[in-house]
Image 1 (cartoon, rainbow, N blue to C red):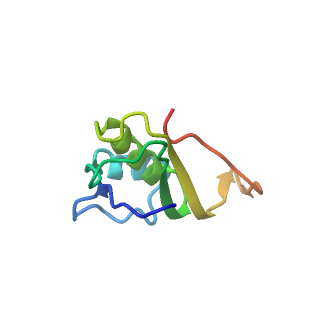
Image 2 (tube, rainbow, N blue to C red; image 1 turned 120 degrees about the vertical axis):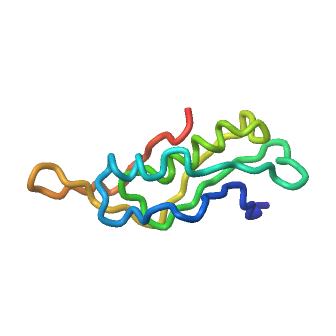
Length: 107
């Protein structure tokens, strides 16, 4: 069964990413997340799922996954991402939106 686990912390003072371009979003979040060990450890065969309400540039998910990957308590536990919505990407003057997308947040 799935259970929530607050494994990430982000300190106060992180600037809101609204209105920032992709590079500025990455810079804004670089090194801002830290992972903490889950109480009682992770069960054998666990999967970690990062949940984000809206993905724009992927900076939040990427930085969160980086922090988890660096945590000794996570080890080789697979890290997946789930999002509710995605903002369309602009290509030149056109907006492109695919019906489905996948990306790796941790190799």
